[in-house]
Length: 111
Image (cartoon, rainbow, N blue to C red; front, top):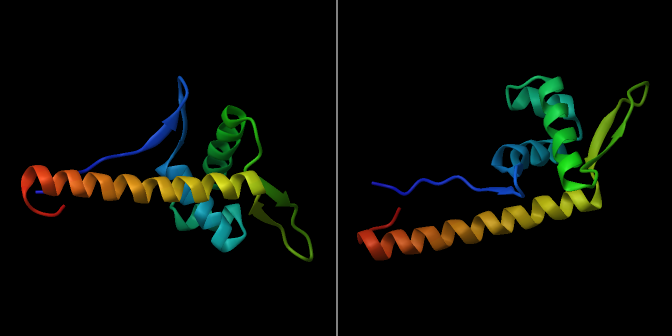
């Protein structure tokens, strides 16, 4: 038996969750929205739509993009985007630890 959970941030509506967190981490690794979207089995349009919707709801930009050309395009996290990703990562780790401890206390064995 194991405890399962899903974490997201909302303010009346969904703002940020594990899916967008994973997408932004993949963009940060690859420097490309398109490559990150392919890795996550989604279209570029779907990825870009999720990012733009989150930016509108958060009130700040998550990415800085560069148009393609000879040097190639790319994307990188803004300082605010990086801070959000890092804070959410730490938050997930803390929640996971707390849930694991509560599960062990209440059910007598680790998740």
